[in-house]
Image 1 (cartoon, rainbow, N blue to C red):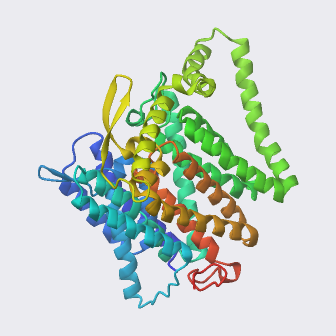
Image 2: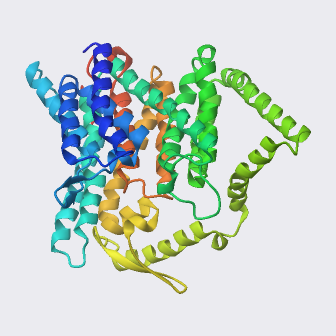
Image 3: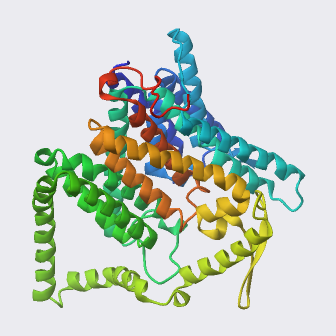
Length: 491
């Protein structure tokens, strides 16, 4: 296994090359050839260690979101939906193949049920994409996007499976994600200081108010919190500073005003609390006293200041800035028809129901548009506008394709049950990753998570991590995690 210092150093240089044109684009238009030069520069370091490609993809996605994942490649007057994220994943794939050939390693890969389920699902997606060329009224660009989001990015799962094969690599991958999401604390603070979150204009509110953190960053923080709490739970003595950052991450999620993330994260944290409390009640109580006490003390001081100095200018400003948050919370008590966001979803879901009844088995396919009518309002929309990824999959691919998607998740749930019951060495990781899985699936009921690459890719990342734990037993912690295990494999 390569020295992790060398891997981190190569990752840093790869990130430097890939991030340079993105940062420059905030100040001036960047020609395509500079992007291509950055890819060539990054390729030199990624080809040394394929882990560097994975780490770079995660880091840049979390920090830059759509600026990294949705920057089209422009050639002449044409713009192609080939994004920097795509190129990094392709480079990582070639790096793995190159290093296997250079080191003359023979990878013995035994397919498990989850692997086969994902492969069959990807093949069905490919068939639907090819069928769109022979279907009238299809937007081929939208169809291609569906193919990429459902099939191409699923390849990330296999990259993790092939590259992350040892315990040290697994912990390094988790550390990279933790470190990157801790950097998002800077975005939280910057948003609160400047009175508006960075890049929040791409996800405007349907009601009055201002987001202090963008939607993608809020989503990444929700995953990070689910992962961090179980890990810090088992290292209470050394987790004071990290847990302080977690409290700031909570503030960021609240200030993003993303209600569906509040709900999803609450469910994920309830699962984590229930699992940890059931296993180690006394440790959990100590953890709450140690970390919850500091939060309650800070909250009490803030409330005391507001009570003693109600007319202080800073107090008035805080009251003004917190009003959208209060209104957002109170909106849970409103009738759905009074909320523009919920009203929109109810209308498009009713339209989705009609389309499903008309095409229940095979769906309507990719790239199809339909007319949305809400009173006097008329708009042509695509299924990705339904703001419900699970429903979009059902409408696009019918019960056939949706059945394979359900099969994937059925296998995942079975694996999670097995590893939570039997895998004690990775227990904190298992609890956190299960929380991440819950948050993702619940969040996808309210936004196009699978239809957007900067969110959808994390579903496949989560599945890859679950597979690693499922097949990397303690007695194999220094060896490959792709060996045969008759309790879980398809053979």
